[in-house]
Length: 356
Image (cartoon, rainbow, N blue to C red; front, side, top):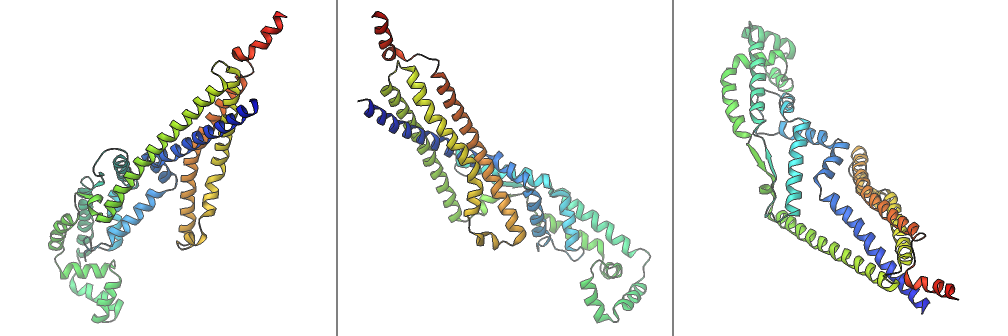
């Protein structure tokens, strides 16, 4: 009878600690992936906001909506850089992440993925105006058309060559002077600024820009998260049920055995979580095929690997913390088993011995 009871307890202990540790690990993963702070932390530590700013500046400065013959692409980039700063990128990205997380974890019908340009739009237009006003009056002051043309001919050798030369050297002082004399710069500026203002919207709604397929996929992800959360609740419930059955099999009054038989699996379960947290991040990176990173180029490959490794380490640091707590609880119960009584069942032999 004692052997059967021991086997039952071993099976119950295995099921109890398996469900409990799996629940704790998956909960740690879910809580991190559905936390805006997790993403902002990873982005901050890996300089992603600065990279995102560079990409946005390249995109906007090359946009046809912002292009103008009066100003170069590099000048447009510098103007926008004054307003679209790294801190602005961080603030807007944080709002987008929070909007997405809120949608995925609440009953919201759609995510708030709005990027506001209302505050930076006037700054961009004012910077454009200041740059143009500073640029053109300076190049046409005290310069005659004959002087400008003479200088250009000396540089390029002929009128046909001068056109090509100025197209390739837009910042050349004589090319700018020729443009300022030939065309009225103030009229050009007056025309360019309203067009620029119309080209920059007050806000972008990323959700509205999504295709119907992307919106449907996002809705499916939200459904999967709800089902996953429900599965975690069931898993925790099963762990509690097996723990209660273990206590009933051991005997409610037998505190010594309860502490020992519950403490040992908790101690080993916590240790298993700690080991998993230590080795999983590096193992996952190694399991990803090298070709998946190689296609990104050497620099980008190393960057992506570092970001993924940092994200995994952040997630599994929570797993490790839960493992440490679980192991500590198991150790405390195990130590307590040496100091608590064994209940009536354990005390009966001692009582009978005293009577004799």
